[in-house]
Image (cartoon, rainbow, N blue to C red):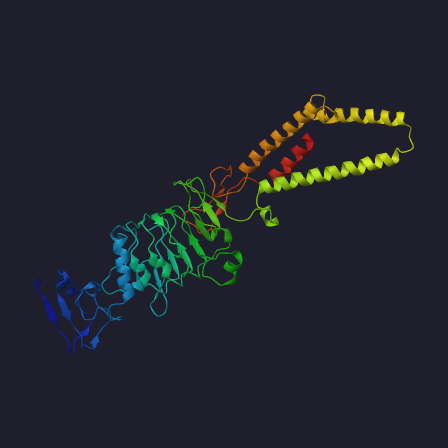
Length: 405
């Protein structure tokens, strides 16, 4: 029957499942199969028949569940024959809810697809958008290439999206996340995604306000992308709302306000300027107060005694500054001396600002000396801080500095 073009068994009293041997009729897409009217035929139809263009049950959701068909396309696009585990995938009769990595609701709707570290390659099929009830999608730690399908952005019930550690490329459209309002976990790092991720409200308060399915204790690990530096590209991925930025070496750092920024000061440079201005201001106030106090205290002394005290104070100040210090010129009246001292101070402040700017925590810049101390392993959701800094180190540092000073 290999040359069969039409098989019409409709309106009979056929029972049981449609035989799997019917698959032999679909070697060529021109075969038509009609079985309508056989009310006692059991569900489902063999998977292959559901992809026959002229099968009268192809649009029957019980005989040919649309999610099963969508997952078949996903399997073939991701080279399912090469997967580490593909138990029951593409079985003619087994419900897709029993396929490896697929979990369903009580109404047989796919709610979870977890195929992490399972040897997936190829590309992601757009039919993944035909799983409208999907809540968790974890395809991390595979070798998937190509673009992230736009259809994922239509899965409005999605809570968790993990595509990290793949070979995904391209740019994320500006409105990709606009419909994904229930997301609690996004991990896209260790890919080759570029561009800008916008239109996604992501705050710690919003992250905590709803119940979610994940055992995730750290807000820092909730939204991870390759927005760190150095990057494989001229400009790294831009993501203002990401909670963690990873760089080309696979090292990561939290994207959050520093202690300085929490005081509404933009960065360390501005803090240094505020600190310096405050120091100068306080110093001037102290000088004026002490000067007024000394004038009041010495107002009854004769002029000779006042001059002697002035010379004594000047010698004490020179001794404190150091005989070889350029700051001694501030004790004199020479224009050249004052100019030299002022230029020196300006030069030192300029050098200090260079170090301050290099110490900025700016994840979008490759011109800072920030050390990325966090690691986000392939085999866990949470990221870990591997920094050696702790209270013991700071205590020893404080003791050494205090002793030196």
